[in-house]
Amino acid sequence: MSDWSEVTRPIPVPNALTQPFWDAAKQGVLALQRCQSCGHFQHPPYPTCVNCISIDLQFEAVAGKGAIYAYSIMYHAGDKRFAPAIPYASIIVELDEAKGALLAGNLLDAPYTDAKVGRRVEVVFEPLNDEITLPQFRLAEGG
Ligand SMILES: [Zn+2]
Image (cartoon, rainbow, N blue to C red; front, top):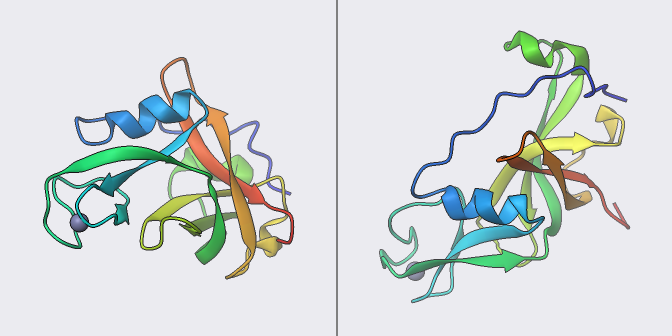
């Protein structure tokens, strides 16, 4: 199992588009940008809906359950801060209720060999500091 306790993660820097995502995560809520015209969820946030070009976008809370869409096993630390966790699984997750909105994260609390396309995962929240909490994933029931 990857040891994340010695990893000092880079701290994301919110901007005007992503601030609501980070504000929600700090409260333990996964909120994604949703088009109010056509209902499409998208992530990362954009100024317009990628489906219908509407600018009527709001952040809405989602349950945070989904499946691994793709993954990569990291055997080398391009960023030396991640070296203590090598090897580890970086995963892309497609949420059940937000098809097309793909979230990147790490598979926590499981051997990296458990990362497989289609496995069930759920969001967990990893506080990085007083301002930033990082949504991450762990295997879910049935995963
Ligand atoms: Zn739309």
